[in-house]
Amino acid sequence: MGKIATREAYGLALAEFGETYKDLIVLDADLSKSTKTDTFKKKFPERFFNAGIAEASMITTAAGLATCGKTVFASSFAMFAAGRAFEQIRNSIGYPNLNVKIGATHAGISVGEDGASHQCLEDIGIMRTIPNMVIINPADATESILAVEAAIKHHGPVYLRFGRLAVPEIFDRATYKFELGKGVELEAGTDATIVATGLMVPEALEAKKILAESGINARVINIHTIKPIDKDILIKAASETGAIVTAEEHNNIGGLGSAVAEVLAENCPVPMRRVGTQDKFGKSGKPAILLEEYGLTAKNIAKQVEEVIKLKK
Amino acid sequence: MDKNRVRELKIMANKIRKDALTAVYSASSGHPGGSLSIADVLSVLYFEVMNVDPKNPKKEDRDRFVLSKGHCSPALYATLAERGFFPVADIATFRKADSYLQGHPDMKGVPGVDMSTGSLGQGICAANGMALAGKIDNKDYRVYSILGDGELEEGQVWEAAMFAAHYKLDNLTAFVDFNGLQIDGDIDKVMSPLPIDEKFKAFNWHVIVTDAHDPEKLYDAICEAKATKGKPTVIIMKSVKGKGVSFMENQAGWHGNAPNEEQYNQAISELDAQIKELEVEA
Image (tube, rainbow over all chains, first blue to last red; front, top):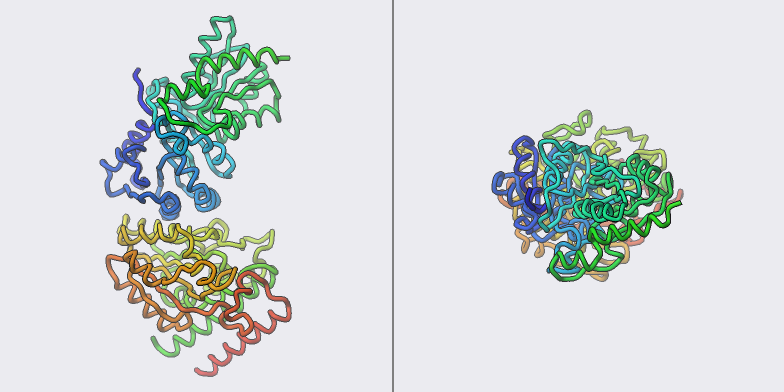
């Protein structure tokens, strides 16, 4: 299995499902070469529309198309889709509960050289606060394609978060079961649980290996759907392993870590640590170096697990 | 347009005004001024022009309407009620916690509302989406949207203008309720969006300037818009905010304030008198 960016898989998914779903319309805001919506554009040029560098217009136009029975994907970088057009998403898609999927690419710090203005570390947080919004952060190409399909089948707003960076392929499309809203236990474990999403899933798996060397048996859970989050799998993990470390390519305020903390604080409070970008803006640099610098690594996850285990009752 | 028909549309516009004021008065909340200024165009659209069916509010090939200046929901609700989408008696439940008549248009709960609006600048973009869907599907339906003149200060309106012209949405007709007033005062004193006609022309729209309170002129403008191919049309309607109620006319203060009992009664009797005058003309 090789490496492929989830944004790449997003583009392939749109082109694939565009065949079956004839009412699928795709909008972009002058970033189709980067978001990969141009894969769909090349195949179905009559169903692709560029809104230009005008994200508010793109999002609200998508809403209007949806009122006429279209299934609409609207894409841009996460910063501009979720960030700039937040109010349009909230008022024109979320509130009327319209069938628009926001395909946001270039999420997180792995955007790399473009730097802080383009590295969205807030999008999961702000999208979570919108009622009716489903949020999916796929970990690899297979999960991305299945997530797009699930989004199409779900009637209502969906926020899909993809990355720029090529990532390892983890799941096999022939056998992997993707169920919207259901967490996936990738590895069994008893001493602590690592709950990861997106780009941090392979890091979580690697962290488990590092911890095994010290005799720590960590469970690994993949949360692809951050909203609605799978409370059962989290509560089970907390009650059975007694310690949780979350990991996301996002601020540790508002995203997966906060979502997990909300569930556990109310149902099964256990010691927790949240691996994320620690409420800092990003910066320019090679993605691998940035991920290391901001602690988004297997090594750091393993370190946090060792810390949190000490606090177990 | 036949003189009788013009008269009927004027009468309906005044009924819309009455109902809109009833909504705001019953709620002690809402936006009368801008509701009164668009009563005539709503009368022409819903009672003369638009292909809609109150018994089938979501019929696929219907004409669409988006109130981009969503705060004037009293006028839209009044129009929809009079047109038969829901009971006129329900108007008095406007903005109450147990009512479906939300303060700003709610497509989920109000029959006949094609898009939820309220946040300025967004409705016109949604209208673009509807018009685009019509082009994609090769449908004949038309899309109408009313903007406020203050609303033109929102940048998103100009994103919409670019988009509509770029995609040649000639099935879209926008209206600007040019009453010259916004909450904080005269639009040219707060943040001048003038010249409105030149701006839309520069954005490659077909522009018509007409009188907001003349049903015949409005109808002719709408027909001209229909006949204009290859570009969207904006009909800039010179209007009077608070039209029809003597003490509300041209007052910025009546943008978002509800009349008290005395004011409401006076307004209703003024409108009743105007209706009577029109009926007598017949």
